[in-house]
Length: 357
Image (tube, rainbow, N blue to C red; front, side, top):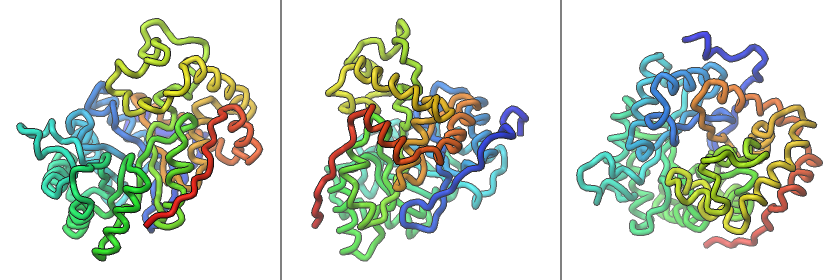
């Protein structure tokens, strides 16, 4: 391993949490390959980030069949093979739904039909060079496929030893509950984990809509975009750089296909200026706690007890270290500090009264 990927001596020790109501433990911070590995980040840089993460105790790595047309899985698999990581020492996940780049006819290479779940999973395993993944997600809902078929498909893969747990990504609370209802009726396993967007600016689903699912089903969260694609780092506090993808005020995300999943519908009621004003107001809080705004934003996400692991992205080793340093901030996130942050954000969701089936 290169000395440049060895963790600094003052880096905090990694924390591990149970994945929902299961016995599996995942690092509180994980590394994902969305928009990076197999895409605009060269393989050597991806390898460096993965080995740096592994060296500081990150044991959970996330990818998907749709990331860079499957290249993200190939890069992650190649890194694991190159450095000879023991299979029992890491947790890896992938997601199925968008696999049209991996076939000549897209008709059955997307969605959550039993055919695509099985074939998509097998193709992902081949790209990863693995016999199984630990976690397999339904990468968005498929409302054209009966829920019973989806539940049976994931349970078939579990029974075949192709994955250990299945979960969802950006499903509604009602859809997750429906999956559990069907699984219970069939004597099968329901979804254990959900991968939603969650950060200081996107809170409604995690803090309100899913509230009953944590108690009833032990749902674990592995959220993505804890820094809101960099907005919460404060790098736009003094203005938007000329030519930046965020330079078009309220329309800043619409021209960037890669960011639509992060921003679409999340900032519809606020102008870009209003968002930056709030983020700027968080800076004194971060400074008082002896951290950066990125560190504050990461610690804020990890403060939520329902978060099993926050998925981060990195194109440089230093970004991995920065994410891990947020663990130093976590003990400082007192209830008083959390209330102060809520006072700045003014977006704390109201409690929802839900009654499932």
